Length: 368
Ligand SMILES: Cc1cc2nc3c(=O)[nH]c(=O)nc-3n(C[C@H](O)[C@H](O)[C@H](O)COP(=O)(O)O)c2cc1C
Image (cartoon, rainbow, N blue to C red; front, side):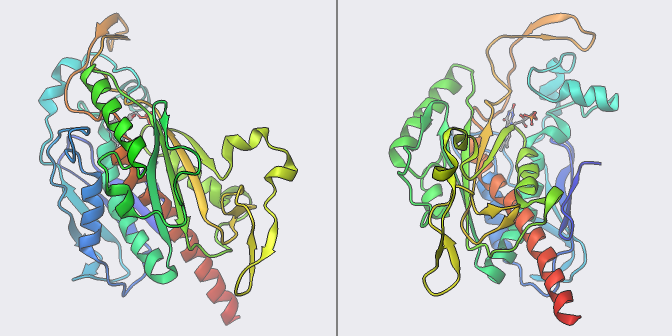
C-alpha cells in the first residue's frame, strides 16, 4: 500500500535508498507517443545528488534504463517500467546509527508500522525514491506539453528567512533555463546569491535549512479536476505533501487570503482577448470548485530543514534509552534545489491523470 499513485495514469515506485535499484512502473500511458528519452534523462540529472557543493555528495549517475512498455522511443500502451541502479549505496555508513532513532527521520515510525525496516538510509522514506517520480513525471510533462502546450516551472522562492521580494519575478515568462541559471534554482540573482552563501555557512556549521518552492503551470485548459473529494487542489496537495520533507501546501492566495476581505480576494471575470472568459486577478490559483479555470495554476510548498544535522541532538536507542548523538555522512544541507524537479514531476503526474480522465469522459460523451 502507499507506493502507487493516480487513477488513469497509475504510477508505482519501488526501491530502497541503499538497495539494488529504484524505479517505477507507469501504467495507462497512451500508446504511440514518441518519448524524448534524453529529456527524461535531463530531468533525472536535475535531481541527481552531487550537482553542486551545496548538495549531497553521494555519487550516482542515475542513468535511466527502460525495461518495458516502449519500442525505441514509442510507447506501446502497456506498462512502462523504468529503472535506475544504485551505484553509491553505502549501507556500512549506517552501522553506528542502527541502534538509535534519528530525530525527524522515519526510522521510528517505519519500525512501529512494520516491525522491521531497511537498515540504512531511510529505505522508502529516503529522497532516493523520488528518482522514480521524476522519471514518471518527465513522461507526464512531455504528454502535457505536446498535447496541450502546458508548461510547468518550479523554483526556490525562499530559504530560511531569505525570500524573493514580492513581485520581483514574472510568472508569465519564467523558464526552466532561468531557474537552472543558478545552482540553488532561485531565478532572482540577488536572492540566489544570498541563499547560496547561507546554505554554505549553515552546512559548515553542521546544520540545515528549509524553505519554500513555488510552482506555476501555464497553458492548462479549463475543466480539469473532479468535484468533491477529488478536487484538483486536493490531488495536488496529496501529490506535493507526499514529497519527502514537505510540510505545507498552498494554492493561490493560500494562507495569505486569511487577512483579505472577500471583495479584495474575489477574482473578477472579464472577457478574454480573442474570446472566452478570464479573471482579472488570480487569487484562486487557477482553480474554482476544484476544477481548472484556464488561469495559471499557482502553488507553494513549505519544506522543513533537512533532518540530518551534524550538531549534537537528543534521541533514544531502539530500546528507548536516552542518548546524545551527532550524525555524519552524505546529505543535503538544504533539500530545496534538488526538490524543484520532484515538485514539477508530481504536479505533472496529477495534471496528466486529470487530463486523461477528462479526455476519456469527453470522448465517451461525443460517441453517445
Ligand atoms: C530532493 C530531496 C533530498 C533530500 N535529501 C535529504 C538528505 O540528504 N538528508 C535528510 O536527512 N533528508 C533529506 N531529505 C528529506 C528526507 O527524505 C525526509 O525528511 C525524511 O525521510 C523524513 O520524511 P518526512 O520529512 O517526509 O517526514 C530530502 C528530500 C528531498 C525532496
